Image (tube, rainbow, N blue to C red; front, side, top):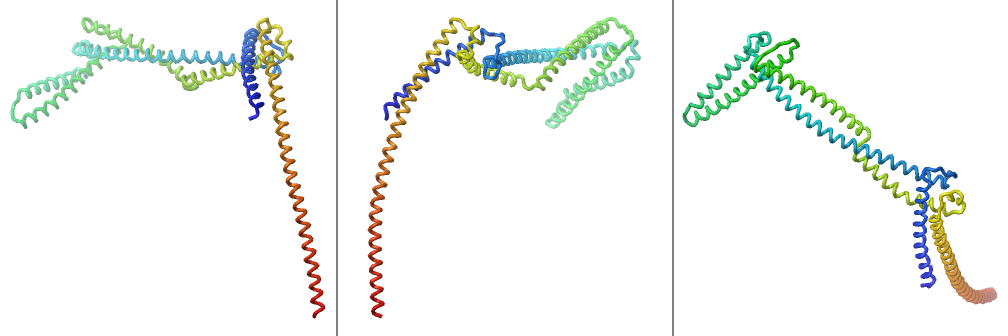
Amino acid sequence: MDERNNIIKELEDKNSADTEARNRLLTGLGETLIRKIGDKPLSFADKGSPGAVLEEYRQLEREIAESREIIKSLEVETHRLKELESEISGKEKEEEQLEKESRELNEILGKLLLPDPQFEDLAGSSRQQEENLLGKIDELEKKLEDLGEQSGGFLAWLGKNAQIAVSKNLLQRNRSSLQRLYRNVGAKFLSLEHELTVDGEAGETVIKARDLKNQMNAVDEELTLLKGERKKIIDLFGVEGSPSRRITGLEKRIAYIKGVFPGICLRFGSLAADEAWAGVFSPFMEREESDILEMAELLYSKIAERELKIKKLNAAITIDKKKAEIEKLRRAIDAQQQKMQFAAEAISGFERQISQSEQQIGELKTFLQQNE
């Protein structure tokens, strides 16, 4: 292998390392200058100018800031939605418990009021229903008691168990109907608009039931507000998409922009190293920045010198290759010329043979004519 190729490889490796070092210097310089310039305006806003590159950087910075604000807002809304779900769940359980207590108080109140003669109008047909249900309950309880005392064989035992099961079911249904009757009477009393007063245990129950109703109303109002707030957030998410996916997308965009920044800083630093833009950057250049430019310029000079050496070596290699090609072609020409000479001699010999043959043909034709 040509030793010059090894030299070129070494020069290219050094240039690659120095180019990376120079790019790092200029990237750092560009970042420093962008930070020092801040919000100050730069002239020359044409494409590729320092002002255009700086504006590109600022736009990306603004996009990152806006994306972070959106992420923060989404995280706050997501956290609030979780809080609302927890609060709503708690309020629904509280409401369920209050409704249970309300049903129990209504049942107690109805049971206390139904026998009272002063509530004849309130009772209506409920007293007759109560009597019917109580009669059925007593009858079923007695029947169950009698069945429990019966004895007999296996078949009698099977029949008794079937009757017990049916009677227990009926008894439970009648008891539930009686409880529902009492609850309805109690609820009806509490819903009356006119003033009715009761004393004793019934009065205390009324006070408790009305207090409980107020609590239920308050809880219902709170639930309405909480569910309304939850709906607004859910509707917002429904329009704009899943918050987790949006956050992931914004975070990816931020990461991408951060990856673009070094390239922009390198372009900005390279412009600062260009004498054509010296007037733009001079107000922001201090000793440290000038030193960086000197180091970058020194590296650039070394890279340029090596590039020239590489070009010279490549030119010399190319010249030698071309010379070798020319020599090869010349040898090929000589070989072809020799072949041409051999071919010319052969052609000349063939032409003599043709001439001799034609002469012999003429002589033979003359002989044949003379001897006809």
